Length: 371
Image 1 (tube, rainbow, N blue to C red):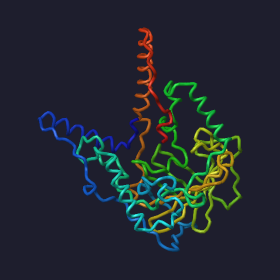
Image 2 (image 1 turned 30 degrees about the vertical axis):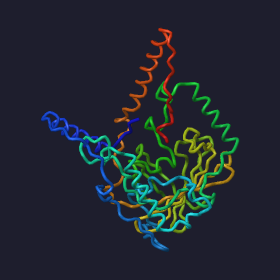
Image 3 (image 1 turned 180 degrees about the horizontal axis):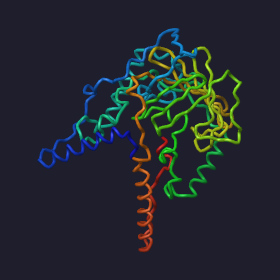
Image 4 (image 1 turned 180 degrees about the vertical axis):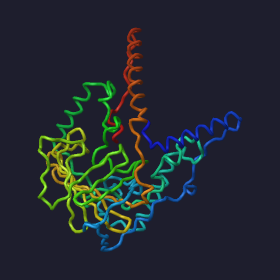
């Protein structure tokens, strides 16, 4: 489906369309030419430097300073789990030379997958839509060595639970109403950690700090988490009866690292089949003046036999490159179009049945927007 882009991108598209229309009226029609890797402009983000034993500056009230605008576009294209070609290896076994070669291959593949990528106005894949075309990956895969680079197998309890979810969902069509679509399609949430996973666009975040609080603003779906800070185990979570899309977060600093524990999730925002009993533990560790390593640990004994973790880097960028306005509902033509198309298909099936023709509905995945 067509996703929502910032209003700035919409304005650019309107201007481009007007220019193309004028050219067509003059008979001067140009064709978008696929872009070459060498044609890509340099990224605006600074180099993600890692400094050994880096110590960040302090805020006026004494907390480690991690505030700022960040992106993880450079982590786009990294396999979630360890690829088969690295079986038996750990992250540290991948040399800088090997990683550089892999990253170059991934960059070339990103361009190859988008043959219409072009700076020419009116291109099917305008360059300004993409934030991931020159991703300088920090690692070979995301899941850490704690579980051998793999997500642990799903427990039978979780498999049964997820099968029941699918059974209940199949009782309705994939687009009988807006509520049959994903929360992402409906402009409600991309969930945690989904809202901070790199995509082709929307990979900007803003970390804000104040005495006793940290807030994280996500460009995707325009969400903000407000995280109270308190010494570990001194600020209890809300009642277990209260369930939230983004869970209930509590944070504290361990040295220079911000640790955030989130519980009280709803099963409506299950990540990789997790249950509402999931405890999510995030570490935001400054490892350089422009770099914070973000690691996420999943602890859910109702889904996996043991906890597992993935990690990636966030790179600080100028505030001007922070989150854009994410005008989701205002530009969510995809939802209207999906529901309209579903009603049209139903009418076609009914008309065919009247003629004795059996017409099967097209296959749709209501969770497509979350993948």
